[in-house]
Length: 117
Length: 112
Image (cartoon, rainbow over all chains, first blue to last red; front, side, top):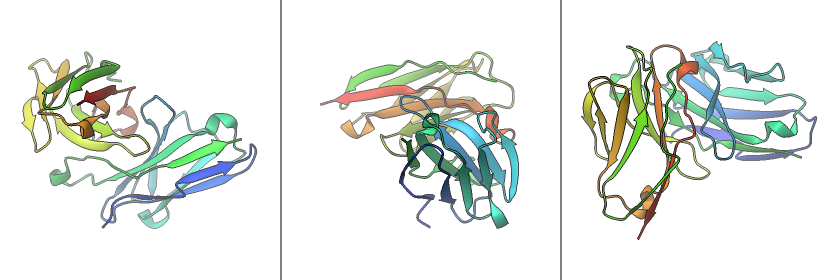
């Protein structure tokens, strides 16, 4: 397994457009997380899934944001009617809740950098 | 929420030992302390995690005093490639993911 992958790596869009990002976690991981990171700040939690169930959503995740993880595998994050304030790096991470060997560390993907013009 | 406080930036030289301290005064009983490293344009990478006393792996050591209100990440003999942002996180990894907060991190710069 090559780790967590995200697609696309970069996305430039115009304000008001919808965008969708994809995350493919490490195959045996049952947890998947989405974060948003702006310049000079640490990642901010958005939401996470355990298998296919979305267990938590941050208040940062407005109704324009939606995330899915069908069949507990890959996940998509959609932003509708994008705003300039949505410009950020969107990071995906996965972890295995029950693996003592991994110490429950999160494995991050390279991120998708979104620029809203 | 267990908020963390760490220095905004630190400088050191190649070959030196670097210690980055993180304060977490309101850490909860079930919380673990985790450190991540992040290079520009990459996602964070797990370094080390601990609950109490001392933890050591192949890249770092983590020192946690008995009261657990602070922790120190120790990087032995740093090199230029250790220049990165280091995040201290406190939270229960088996409970609510939203309560694990990254903060702004410490920007470590290593000079030749």
